[in-house]
Amino acid sequence: MFSRRFVLFLICLSVEIVVKASCISEDLIRTLLATRKSCKPGYNENVAFHAYVARHTPFSGNDILKFDNVDTNIGNNYDPTTGKFTAPKAGLYQIVCTIQGLGTSAVTFQIQKNNDLFDRGYAGGRDWHAVTRVLLMQLKEGDKVFVQHRDPKRKETVAGGRHSYFSGRFLQ
Image (cartoon, rainbow, N blue to C red):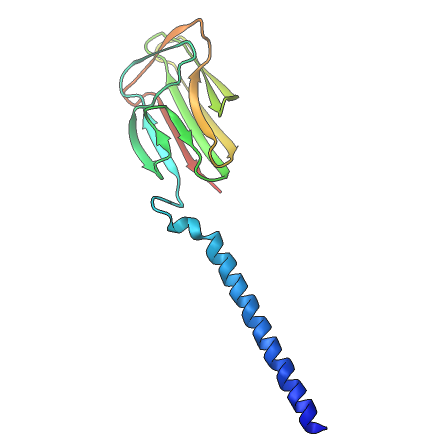
């Protein structure tokens, strides 16, 4: 009788050990799969960019403003040739845009999320007037954010030389 109980105890003990080891293995596999993005070439957990308009730039129609001089581009998600930032992952981002009109030129602009209006800005037509928009945007992976001219009938000039810039960073 004692030996049967002992054998049964050993069987139950070994089954429990195997089950626990299996659970630990499954947890480890889940963790490794969740973090596999970090092993991809070019993947960077940090996301930040800062770019400015190098020269005074005509801005009219439905133009997208290209901030062509890039100071910071961690993760390489801002494209100065298109003027668009592409979110590499879902989350909360801070986007900042400062636009200054050249001399007495007013500038009307909007910040787009994909092809949808997210926010508007207006730098009034006084001497070198500028406006800054600081935004919190919930983005999905692949969403595009950019600055577009707002009034197709107006022809305006954006001041270059670090007076007008576009920046963003991943918060969480």
